[in-house]
Length: 401
Image (cartoon, rainbow, N blue to C red; front, side, top):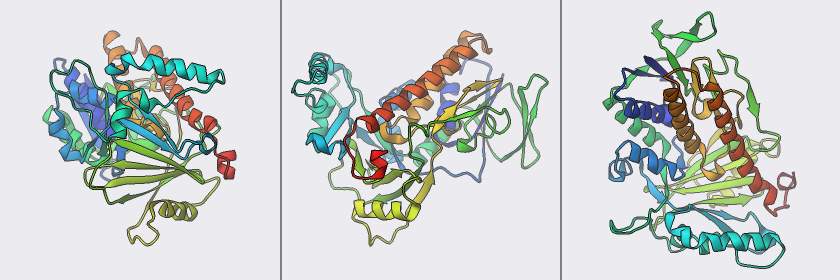
């Protein structure tokens, strides 16, 4: 059986590595076709604890990949300026660990009490171990005899992570080809038969994985899968990014600060901070956004240029169409407020592999996969929407909208 992945980046190479590792004993040939014209956006990026499990599945130690990706530990996301009317400057979303078994029930009881209108203590960082670690800027590593499992994520350079995963996959036998898809041939039933590259090389395969980014070359352009926008729920469609100097003491948390027309991320790597401003072009233009961003960073006189990015927020109507699945940006995207991008890539890849194998490497469980993938995206969407629905900012048309 032949599998062809179209597009590299973190999504394509994550899928390639998982396929190669889990199906090493199967007679499966994996090829990744990557356009040399499409680069990886090397911004600082954060993860959920699923990335920790990803590297554990691949038997890759943190000491092997973290230094090569300028990675740091992440135990928490701190939200600053989101609820000024509450009188609380910031609140936290710590990752829940096994040790929290002894304290999370008290937090949940207090939260339910608070919803009844009674004043009680509900700051997660005071109940959950990772919140305590974040307050003390302490890392999550424990001695070997520590009896509880700690959960944590990472901050990393996404470009360097893509390169690391590419090298790893090629060592595992994944064939890497650099070329651009110019034509797609189909079988009578609508399945993809082969790809024709810009060098007129034909790549035939049994199954295809679309990791071509927002272009969605296979799923949208050639299979005609509908894209469902989330714009009615999530306004943001743009971002401006710029790095800044890292502090002497590196934080163990991502910071998401709400400002006039959106929010700014601050992600600590070993060599710099990755900064970005997520906003809606319906409310401000790129020049206004960059000005607000530089003011937030106290970088009005900084000579380095900002980069401006566009985001296509939403997801495909069908995540597995014919003999093709989509992963990463070609599958869908939700703004990175809770660092769910790679989480969704990994979860959907694992789900596909389970369903695919359970069906004898056929499309027997295709409908089940599509239902589960759609549910994942829509519930993450709702989770992000809650941040905007429940905040108390009203200082601009953006927040009042």
